[in-house]
Image (cartoon, rainbow, N blue to C red):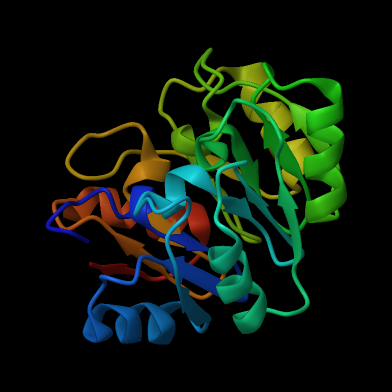
Length: 220
C-alpha cells in the first residue's frame, strides 16, 4: 500500500470488516475482500491514512482516537451499522499500536489508565488486560491476533506469551515479516480466513505465518 510493505500501518481487518484509506486501488481492495472474506469501508482517521496504526477493532467494536472526524465515523457506521464505536477522549492516539485483540479478549498497553482499559473492554465486548510483548508496551504493533492464533515478536517473554494465550484464548507463536521485521503488526493483516503480508516477506516467514495463524497466507 502506497508502495510500502507496512500494510498493517495503513489497513485494519477483523473477521467481518476491513478499513482502508480511500486512495487504495480497487484491485487491492478486491484482493483483500476475497482473501479475508470481509466487507471494506474506505476512510481515513483524522484525515490520516494511518488507519491501522490509529484504530483497533474486533468483530464487536472499534476503538478510534479523539481527533477522528464526524464524517469518517458516519462512513464507518454506514458500512457497519451494528459495530460499537468508542472514541477515546485521551491524548493517546495510536490505538492500533496499543491494543491487540480478537473476538475472545484484548491485551492493551499497560500505560493506559484503568478507565480507558474499561472503555476498550466495553466497546470490544471482551476482557481487556494490560500486558507487554518483548518488554515493550506497543502490543498492537508487536503482534497480530486472529480467532485462530497469534504471531508475536520473536523476543516475547515466557510470562508474556502465557498471558496473551490466556487472554486471547488461542495459541501464540513467534515470527517476523518483511524480511526480518519483528514488529509483525505493521506488515501483516489477517483473520481466520487468510492473511495479507508486506511484499518483501520471505518464503520462510510466510510458512511461519501460515502455521501460527492456522491459515494460508497471501502475498500483497
